[in-house]
Amino acid sequence: MKPEQYAQLVHARKQRAQAITDAGGFEEAYRCGALSRRADMTVSEALVLGLVRQNVRKFLSVFGHGSTEIGEVLRVYEAAGVVRTFAVRNEIAASHAAAALRWVTGEKAAVVTSIGPGALQAMTGSLAAASDGLGVWYLFGDETTEDEGPNMQQIPKPEQGLFLRLGQTMGSAYTLHTPGAVPTALRRGLNRVDDPHRAGPFFLLMPMNTQCCVIEGFNLDELPVGSPPRLGPAADDGRYDEAVEILRTADRVVVKIGGGARHAGREVQELLELTDGVAVTSPLVSGVIPYAHPRNMTVGGSKGSLCGNWAMEQADVLVAIGTRFVCQSDCSRTGYPKVRRVIAIDADAETAMHYGRTIGMVGDAKATLEKLCQTLLAKGVNKGSRSTPWFQACAEKKREWEAFKAQRYGAARLFDPVWKREVLTQPAAIKAATDWARSAGAVTFFDAGDVQANGFQIVEDERLGQTFTETGASYMGFGVCALLTTAVADQPFFGLALSGDGSFTMNPQILIDAVEHGAIGCIVLLDNRRMGAISGLQTAQYGNVYASSDSVEVDYAAWARSVKGVRGVTVDGGTDELVKQLNEAKAYKGLTLIHVPVYFGEDELGGMGVFGRWNVGNWCHEVQALRHQIGT
Image (tube, rainbow, N blue to C red; front, top):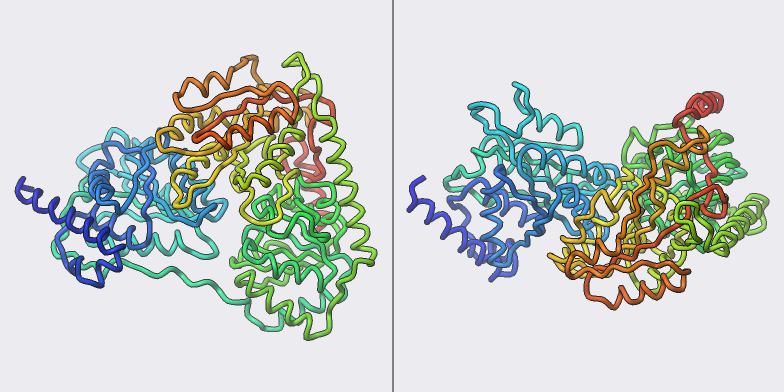
């Protein structure tokens, strides 16, 4: 392209970007004619315009030689105020922040990387978005379409489309091999990222030689709009009547609430009352019904609560709503040993038919529950009573659970053989921090590992949106990276990340990114000098801890302070000192790291305990045998 031609393209690009800003948005500019229907532009600009039309205005990037062209387009559009680019120091962190932004605020974002290792890093991080049903765009540089020879960062193998193959395995993917394919690529991505039931990552691979190709007279009408519609209620082919009859005759109904029921809290509560059921929740939906609700038995699964797991063990009918039945959620398919009939409500047929003896009701959870409750009432089924043996037994188990927790909170400090002094226990620290977060209006993120497992047993949310626990992929480092969303979101908020020392050191660059972009929040780093979840599992299975701890004492507070703008403090006292430091963190206009040495050892008061089974290690044969005995 001649210099004068490129100059004309850049001038027109700046005019389009300014027109969008002046008109107040893409659609406004298009309707009033400020954006011409047809125009010459590069593939990269057409792509950015298409994303802006879909209300993707945030780009989290680690630019490289495979993404300089789209970076230049973003530079122009950011200068005009159309988009914002947040340059971060790690592609996994970019992926986690984009996923957290979608989860907490509903805002869409795109992750931009180069070819090769950067794309692989981001793709690895996308496992969290895929597991938790979060729609995120990924824009990856890719090898050229003319195959002039191996690119130094492509997969070193003489085959075509290897990154495309990886992307199709991890989610949905498309290679922008031809300039004219931009509209199709954008539609495929829109359908995936905005799927109301099965959202997930979409990988758009951008060959380096097509990004800067000029599309002459590109028609902006081709840029797709309109998200896929939600499903309605499950079809009525006699299944509602069959489900009602099962629920009418059941003695012990348990309702498992998964991520697919996020927006059906009111309908779930109505179902519980009509069927004399009790709820067991997934960590993903903490607060979908209030913790204090008398029919909420809280979390259940391999690391569930005493009352949640007891309800699962004793139930004779299971109503599963929007839950994937992952190994830890249903104890590797052994969580419901006495259940003989299952009613599964899900937007995905495979998930709805996971168990045997199942009535699969494929549809939107909220709409299907509304219709099921209407059918129950029409047929005179209203078993809601607080005096039934089932309700009373479950209520007693919840009281036992509250007493169990209180005992641990009361033993807030224990002598630790590694620290060689008394330190806080994780239950006491997590309880104090999460109680503070609810009272302070903070949004809490849990990192993976022992902190996460203890945390979802402890949190007592009264509504959705107070706590976000990434248990879908259980990705170490997600929680601290999620704090970047406090700066990226349209409406800033205060974030609290509860992380272990292992998870934090997976993604410590949040200390730098937070200062660069103005994140507001706090990391409470619970340091037991090990991967506590794995050490605990090794002890339970084999009686020995191996290669899951270290002998290195790290001054995390000093590490935090070494980044100008980050506060770093250590709490060596009790929960009162921790709360004092949390209050100071809330008053600080930036990021604070509170380092808290915590207990690890054999004293049962140092943790929340395990009440379920798990098909892992030397437990596999026993758990598998039980599964086949149950016949689920």
